Image (cartoon, rainbow, N blue to C red; front, side, top):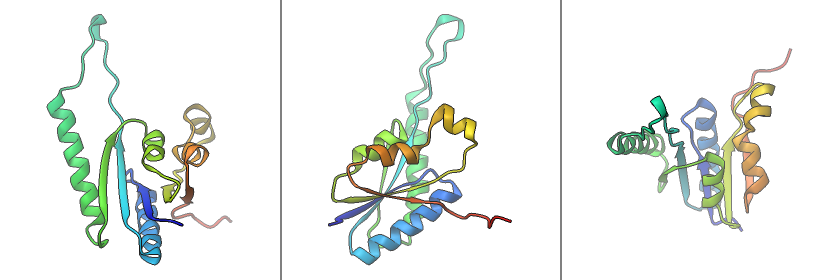
Length: 144
């Protein structure tokens, strides 16, 4: 039995569609919705063999900006919660999921080469999630 709906939001148009679908499922099931955005930490730079770590104030500002943007997106969804995390999107979404959740993610279009090199967050979530996963295709153009 699904007890909550989690949705990954990366602020793309596809993830907006996923959020709408997730909100519909949460309302239909009468369960809470949590929208999750995952920030990926910047890699340390190595100028002249010295490690330069990002300014903590800058990282905090990025997190606050993401939280404000996410809160604005879910404002019209009654009872929706938001969560902003740092890490790998697929890993963090899977870590938030429990067997009683429905995890909703958007399929973002990548070229075949990008998928080969980097994989897809949606495919990694599907492979590792402890719960059912709904992959939302978003707006697709009809084939001719």
